[in-house]
Length: 382
Image (cartoon, rainbow, N blue to C red; front, side, top):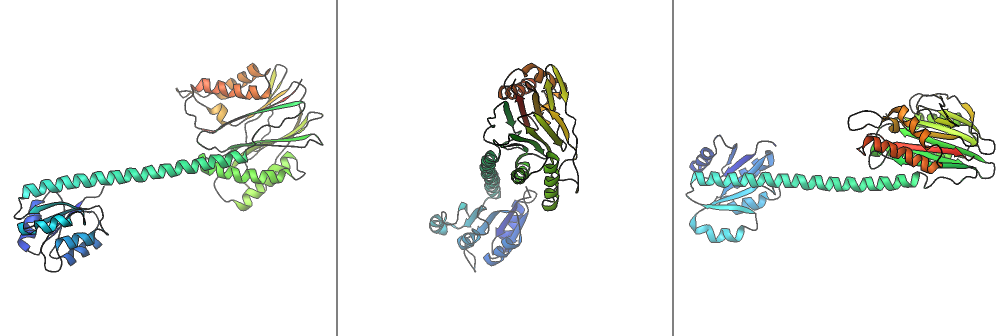
């Protein structure tokens, strides 16, 4: 907090000198010989915390000065110096101009210094309370904004997993903060048996990442209406982001198409962790790589074909799953996640995803996580 000043106002030079001596070494003192001069000092100086004004001055009374100072310094401590004959007048004016105390002339310097010390203490406390109230209002507003952002994100993410004959899908979505930058989506056609699955991770955290993810989700729904392959979806999405959103965010996305009748799948990836494919007791990684969306213009993406046999389990996850740490700072890592997949492979997809996330929470002892966690399990029924 800047150094607080005392403004002394009196039309008698001797009184001003006495006031200055009272506060030497304690507070900086500004002096004025009239109410008009005092108002000019108030206009041109910051940090005035205390105004000490003589009641009887030629251009305006001390009460009039203090009353005019209310608009400029509403929280300043105001002290009136007065003679005995002015007491009745001042008592009626105390409430109108927030007089902290009136002191009868001739004043005792130690008594005045003690009064100013108490006034400064009260002023500092008032500033702290005002700062606290301002911060409280800011936090309440932020909490409401986060609540709205969470509601909006709830509208954007699929409300439930599709019910597909011959396939099970389960998702666990857990943002690190009130809202997250992870995303997932589905597109399926009951007539031709096609299914497309997307899981992604926006760089950054909280509201900025969630808003950028919302923009991408809207574009993704538009791309779903077009006859595009997984690589085509990523290529087109990258071009859209580069053309319209020149920001520092980027998005990693894994996009997969499934022919539900045959189990034939195509996967394209732009920086997401490699998905896991479990067949029987063998767990493998689908190593499709690619540059995240929103970094380079003209990026093309490769596709890898594979097949989901009956009983196969596919698990896609954001890097928050394996990057989660325990209280000692040890990461969960791929090996533990792979072991959890093997342990829960026999469960239906929804329970499998739930238990994969539960094992991460057990490892971290439910400590605060620093990255969003999304786990998507797709299982072809045996």
